Length: 113
Length: 114
Image 1 (tube, chains in turn orange, yellow):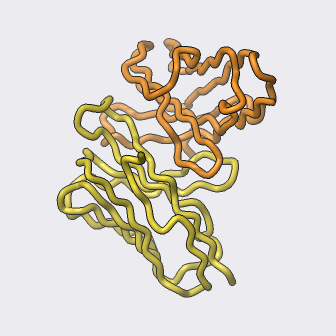
Image 2 (image 1 turned 180 degrees about the vertical axis):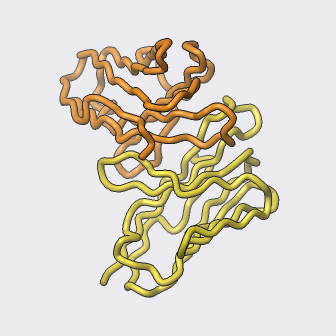
Image 3 (image 1 turned 30 degrees about the vertical axis):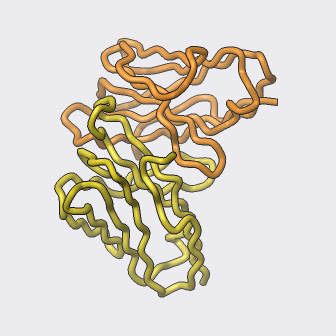
């Protein structure tokens, strides 16, 4: 058990809408990352937050944004949803002092119609 | 293009057979991680390898990190139906990237038949 939880588990939206996905962890950590996994693909890095600030971003447009809170929970926000945004969204935590090892939550399955 | 190439993409074998999955790149990684993922769930960490040439064993699974820290392999001995799943390799922090960022391969879908 990683102790990483994500909500909701499933979500259906229509094109143009906005969505907020949430991630929390039982253990102490200061780095949280978000990944997008399309069907049949490996996860792709969206961005990473360290001490409440974004400190790295993958090849995703600005309509993908995030927040990290003082209690280490995190949000991923996606505006102006597109059909290609349909995917499994994963958050991952990296504990202090780890060798880049990341522990993933169960994911949120987003379907955009 | 993928930074990490995994092969084979699909593997279907009988219970009791041995298999090897490969993960290759031209980039050097600070570490490499192997995950197993079930449909609709998040990846579950199997192992992290850090040192070039490192070999780690997890019951019937043997993981090796290449000497140059650019590639890795996963070998499963006497596969069982419970080993069925998507196996993902992920390289961490190649030069010039965000510290801690993982680059994933596309995965190997393993099916073990009874």
